Image (cartoon, rainbow, N blue to C red; front, side, top):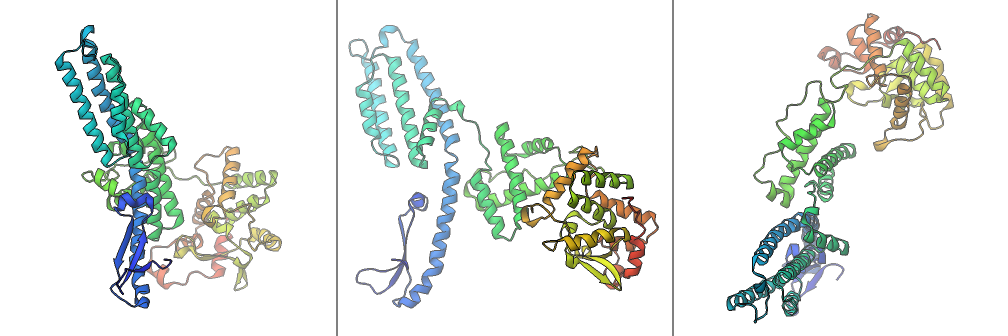
Length: 503
C-alpha cells in the first residue's frame, strides 16, 4: 500500500490509510488512521489523499515533540511521588516501632484479631490498587503483590519495609511503562525511588523544546544567524536555571541578568530572545501552556542598568592614534601576518567596517573620473553602499593586493566563520594582537572607523561628506534622497586629509 489507498471489502469508495508509529500511538489514541475520500475514482482519490496525509504526518511530528517533552517530566514526577511515599512509609514504620515487642509479630499466636484484620485489609487494598495499575500499565503487577504477601517476614517493621520496597518497585515499573524509559533510565528511576532527594530540578527550557523553537523560527523566515543567537541565549538561561535549581519567574530572570555582566543593549537582546521563546511556548507547546497558563511573561518589565553590566558598557570606544596604528602595523609584520598588516592600513585609510574590507575584491577597485576608488558593497544599510577614493598612501598596497590575489579577494583569510563571515578569523587575530600590545577592551578594529570620522571632522570636512565617506545616512531628505553625492574629486580631497602613516 505505497500510495496509502485502500478499498474496503464490498465497497467502491477509496479510503486513505496511515499506520501510526508505535512511539506516538498512545499520544494520538490509535494505531491506524483511516478516512473516506468519498470517491470511487482512483485518480481523484490520489489527489484527495495528499492534504489528509500531510495533516496526519504533521500530527505525528507534533505528537513526537509532545511525547519527548512529556518524557522529560518523568524525573520530577517520580521524585515527587517518591517523597510522598517515603513520608507515608516513615509514619508506618514509626508506628510499628512504637508497638510493644510482643505485638510486632504477624503470626496468629502473637497478634490480636484486630491486628490480623488490619493486615488483611491492607493486603486486599494493595491488590485492588494493583488491578487498577494493570489497567494502564504493565501486566503482572497483581502477581507481584500476591507473591509478596506470601513471603512476608513475621516482624512487622520488616514487613512494612518489604511492602514499601514493593510499592517503590511498582512505581518505577509504571514510570518506565508510561514514558517508555530506556534501561539506563529505568536504573535511574530505581535510584530516584530509593533516594528522591538525588533528583535535581531541571530547566523547563529543555533541548527538545529548543529544537522545536528553532524549527518554528526557521519556518517563519528567521535568518540562521539570528535563530542561532536566540537559541544560544536560551541555552545559557537553561544552564543557569539548572545550576541554581531555580524556577523561571521574574525574580529569577532578574538574577540571571545580573549574573551576565553584559552591556544594557546585550541584556535587551537576551530579554527579546526569552520573550520570543515564551510567546512560542505558550502558544504551541501544550505542556508549557498548561504549566504556565496563569503566569505572566517573566522577560518583560525589567529595568536594565544604565551604562552598567560589562565593565565597558556605556563607554565610548577609544580611537587609534597615528602612533597606535604604526605600532599595530609593525607588530603584525613582526608576526609575519601580512594580511593583518594590510587590513590595518585599509582600516586607517578608509574607515571601513572589518567585514566590508574583507569582502573587497579586485572588482571592487574601480576608476571614477580618472580617480582610483574602492566600491564598497551594501552591508548594514542603503548608505553603506558607497564609493571611497583610495588614499594616495594606500595605492601601492591596493595595487599589490590586486596583483597577488588568488581568489579575487584583496585580503586573504585562513578560514571563514559562520554565516559566510570572512572576517571571523582575522578579527580574532587582531584582538590577540592589540591585547598583546596592551590596548584596552575599548580599542577594537571598529576604532579605526571612529578615528577616520574624527580626523575628517577635525580637518573641517563638511558633515554630509564625512557621513557619505563613512557610509552613514545624513538624516536629511535633501542629501539622502535627492543628492547624488559629492564628486570623486571632492571625496579624494577629503580622504587625502587623513594623516599619512610613516611606514
